[in-house]
Image (cartoon, rainbow, N blue to C red; front, top):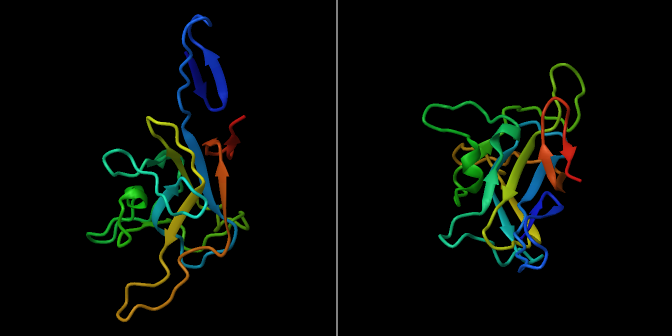
Length: 177
């Protein structure tokens, strides 16, 4: 049996035996490349098997195969009354819930002591079957909660999606080789 882990293949058994290849976990990092004055509010992250974003990848039970790596993702905004802005909202299949970044004035690069570095969302796509992700769809909020809703840019003008990132912390990201 060959086991594939983060791009490295390892032989576990006699090479004369049947070879079974196990699918790797796809790791991604989503980050902004433009300033955001109201923070980032993301409703959903969905993955698709075609580049037109028409065929969504789902588990057998209909749930999303996307798992947010919370300990590596930028903190969420604190609870407001009964409303939570947690990571689970990124993959709950609903557009009326959102993850909110803790920072409200977010810059993609540190500019002074009051502005940290970019907001990042690290996630993995896990499936018992091989998954070929061709499209990642990110749905962000574009209006506030007033009545009638007012347009507000709760999303960046430019985003960047990295594939193969595994670590985030004080020593910044480490690319999987």
